[in-house]
Length: 173
Length: 418
Ligand SMILES: Cc1cc2nc3c(=O)[nH]c(=O)nc-3n(C[C@H](O)[C@H](O)[C@H](O)COP(=O)(O)O)c2cc1C
Ligand code: SF4
Ligand code: FES
Image 1 (cartoon, each protein chain N blue to C red):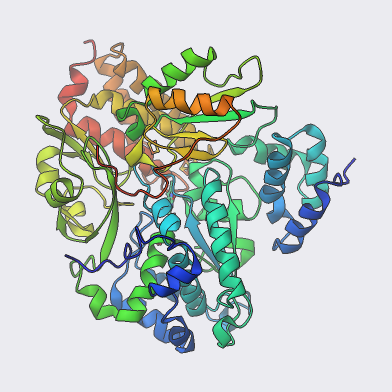
Image 2 (image 1 turned 60 degrees about the vertical axis):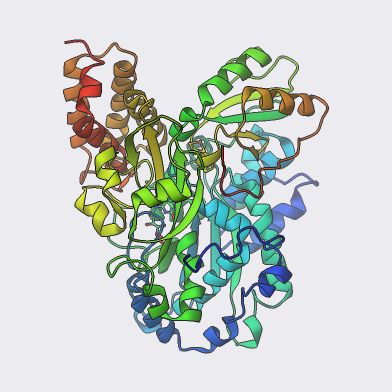
């Protein structure tokens, strides 16, 4: 059915009210679903179609066009490693190898316990402080394999580690 | 020491909050500017010579002048879309600017909106900037509470709503018409131009898409005057620009410099030079999409639009990627071709197919399995792109291939089998 579930309905209504057209609410509504559910289940397509006036085919096209929308559940912690040129020069391949070995998964895979999903992504706009790792969208910069281990340890304890680099704009070696 | 136009509040603790931002001059001149005739604002920005900092370098005042007046647009609304998609490899200045000085970007948005007669602006952030969206939304909420955003800004009678929007992972949404499609809730596939967005943009209405850094310069220009802005830079490249430096330097980062600054000064005095014992091999001066320069070309260059044109490249976004003698240029090109193959929106055959083939061939060459013929095929594919696609992504994907092969031919020839 196409009615929004109770927990999402108020926010969905407010997104629709502030969007210039119903169709323009598409991305914000998809983000709402993914932020709350962790992914975009099939039933959500009906909610978004009914709200935006997009056809199901159009919506499927939108979902597959943007890389960040997930059509299947991911791990509790989604690790995105930038692999574009500046990060490659800064050691991204080593970081990716290290994470694959530590987690025992390949790129695009989730650990069997559902804790971690490992992704390789394109430039994350922090090229001066690579390698860059996003953990559930939170950026960590200059991530050496040693720092990656510290980050994983913290995540296993259920917390995101500090980001002392957050306010920097120059990164002396 | 140059007066910072864009970086004055970098490192000021709490400058992202309204109180501190105001104490450091943000919004101080806004009331006066909102009382000016919109035409006078456009005239001042035009006189400053400010050029778009998103990559294309288009004169900002001229772009604002393209928006038809109300009587010639059937009284349609005008939209202002702030381009915070920042996805060009090597570029990280807008992220730093939004993090440190969100209120200056909001102020620049308000001034531009006023000049354009726009009452609703959106800041479009790339999908990966969730952490920045939170910061900006907090700044906007503070600004709204202080009557800086919303109805009757500062009692001027001018209404302006500003909201953030977020993409979901697609480089092409940084291209202005791709961004417009995305704002409308669709796939970010660029539109055929003309019509240009200033005439027919988002929702069929006149729309101005403007880069974050461009808008951040606007309040300073109005406060200090076009002549003060022109005191920096060169006649054809007035003002200052943020350079994002990455790669093989000892102090990568974002540095504000007057345009026209010699490249060696950026490299040595700001970015800390190369590692010990290293020599310069190549420099990509304006984000991954612009032609690469040899060490000699770069060391003789000044960082402005005209000198980059002299060298056959572009200032682009100011994303400077430095490659020293340890860099494997063949692998570097393979990396970039993979990026473009991943990001092509797929509408145009030469781009969709060409980017895929270029990436596969470049990877093969980098792995030592390529042939001399592969290099010729790479060039053919790249030559088939510029001017034959809907958007400038085609050029962006082709220029790295053509320039790496032209300037560093021997590195490629050494890697292939006869
Ligand atoms: C493939 C492609 C990607 C682009 N990405 C961005 C971007 O991430 N940010 C940006 O401001 N401009 C980007 N642009 C340039 C925009 O199309 C547009 O020129 C710019 O946002 C206009 O603002 P400005 O005049 O202030 O630079 C891109 C252009 C192309 C062709
Ligand atoms: S040039 Fe490439 S990215 Fe641009 S519209 Fe054509 S296919 Fe899409
Ligand atoms: S290349 Fe990794 S953040 Fe830009």
